[in-house]
Length: 438
Image (tube, rainbow, N blue to C red; front, side, top):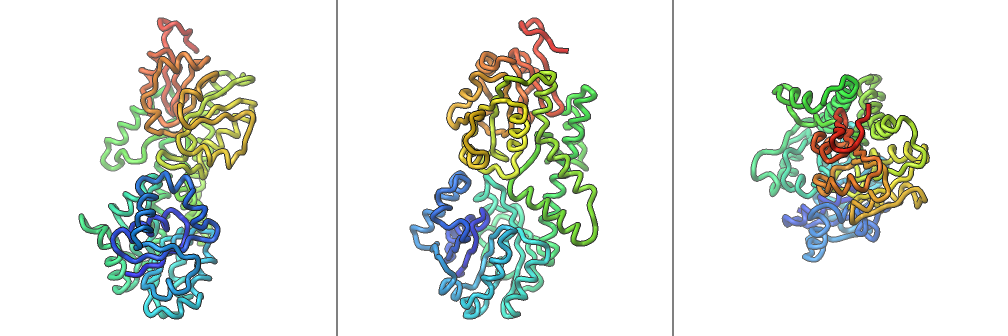
C-alpha cells in the first residue's frame, strides 16, 4: 500500500518505520513544530529500542521517504495515517482540504491521534463523503514502542463499515499473524475505550497509593496488603504497585482528555478528579517523608535523586513526578544532585541551569557524594541492585527514600540505612551502630 504518515509524535514515527519495514511505500511528513532536522536528534526518539535504527534503515532502502509537503505523495496515497497531538487538531483539518486530497481516488484516513471523542467522524466529514475515516487509537507504550506496534496485544479498531476494516487489516496484516488482535467497534466507542482504559489504570494506581498512605499510618507493610489483594482473582496484580506518582505525555493527556469528555457531556466525575488529585499529591510524598525524618529541619541539606524520566526506558519528563518533587525541595533551600541515564537533557531544558542542581548521566554514585539522603524516583534497572555499603558510607544521614518500592526494607536496614518506601519502612538496629529513631 501507499501510506502517507503525518505527525511527529511517537505513534507517527513508529508507524512510519514499521509500515515501511514490512514493504509498504511510506511517505512521512513530520509536523512543522518538529521537522526531521530536529526530530532525528531528539533523545526520546533515539532512546526507543530499535526504532531510530529502523527509521534509518527504511530511509536507506527506499521504502520510507521524508517529504516536506503533501503534494504528490498524498495525492497517490491510499492510506492517510494521522499521528498528531491534541493541540494539532486544526493542522489535521487543514491537511484534509489540501488540493492533494482532491486528487486521491480512494483514501482511508486512519486517526491514530489523541483527539477528542468523535473527532474521526468530524475528520471524515471534512473529506466530503468521498473517503473513509477509521479510528485506531494510539496504544503504544513509551520505551517499548517498536515492540507494542509490531507485536501488539490488541488494536482498538473504530470502524463503521466493512471496507474500512478490510483496509486496516491488510495494512497491518504482518502484525496480526500470531493471534487475532483486532477489536472492532464503532469509532466513538474505540476513542472512548482508549481513554477509559487509562482512566481505569490510573484509578488502580491512585487507590493503591491511598492504601499505602493508610498502611503508613497504621504501621502496616503495604507489600503484605498488595500480595493479599493481588491474590484475589477478581483484582489481580496488574497496576497494584504504589509509588510516588505517575506521569508521561500520553497517560496524563488521556486522563485530562477523559475529564474534558466528562465535563463537555455535562457529567462531572468526582472519581476522576480525585484520581488526578491523588496523583499530584503523591508526587510530593518523598519530600514529606524527608521532612518527617528530619522533623522539618532541612536547612543546609543535600539530596541525591536517582531517576528523572517519567518511566524507565524513555528520556521524557512530561508530567513526571520529579518536577513537582524538585519544586518542593528547592522551596526549602535543599541542594539536589540528580542522576538519570537518559532524561538529564530534557530536565535541564525544563528547569534551566541552576546552582542548586548538579546532574549526572554516567556514574549514579557520583550523585550521592556529599548527599544526606537518596531518593529513588524512576526504577531504571541500573538502580535495582546498588552497592549498599558504598551508599551507607556516602549518605551522611543514611536515609534511602524508595519512591517505587523496588528494594527490600529489611535488607536495606541490615546494611545500616534507614529505609522509607511507599507504605513500607525499616530502621537499622542499634547493633549495627546507628541509633534507632523513634
